[in-house]
Length: 371
Image (cartoon, rainbow, N blue to C red; front, side, top):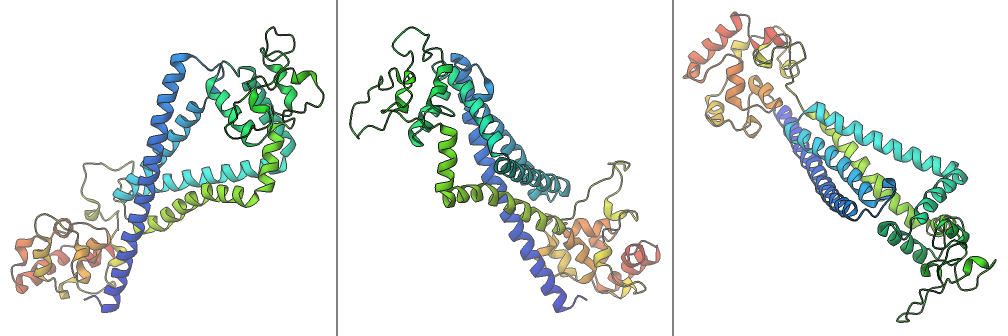
């Protein structure tokens, strides 16, 4: 018989099992929903972009970024959700390792940005100038650039003269935009005031224009991060902490699962894993070697509770003999059938002992085979 302390320990383990399982599945389902939404929005935006052919460089398209981010979130979260539902250790490990790799890559990227600040600034400036070249042909980038210039009170990538790369703002171009800058480079107008879209007229001809921002947006953004270090740190934690939570949850949950997976050289149509001496899944709950299995008492009430619909025996008060079934969360009647014990064999205690003794003498007993 199992002692009270063993039962209490099992109940505690079962409680933690369900708590972690619920937390992990909820976590995966939440990010699965977010990933699905990002993927749907990105696909819609990309369809519209292709419809109007508004972008020359696909790497600058927000829709592409949304699709990639949404796809990664969707696939990884789906793996975690299925793994948590099915207690599939292979999927759970894939989920955990993928999150860990993403976390390490992000941390390394942050370190590289901090250590190689000058080179990073040049890369961002180069990318921004490429987008500025097609400023009026790409509505997506135009909206982003306008927002950045107004938000951070900046103009261009490294400085306002970067707008010379645009064919409409180049000083050799015809038209009123020549040698000028977009109106979002101008000093912020008062609330309710009509925006003068030609406020940057001929600004590129001046060394120190008085009505526009002259600081580049890359430097302005870095200055903003320094001035708002707490806010920037909170943003980074908001990205990293959920990933750490997912890694910890899966790491805690994996040892509590028991996967009945067939190896590559095993016939998938072969016997149940519990019937194979090569798969000693019952070792953890087996009785000490030498103890006679026929001395155990298997309550008929446990079989009645199992029924034919197969509720998990974790919900019953099980004896030691059937604890292996509980450990692997098998329906009790399936587990006992796998052990060669039929419900009809146990009509009364005498037959109960006889069935167990016969099973033990045949060499297929729980103790002799799996201890």
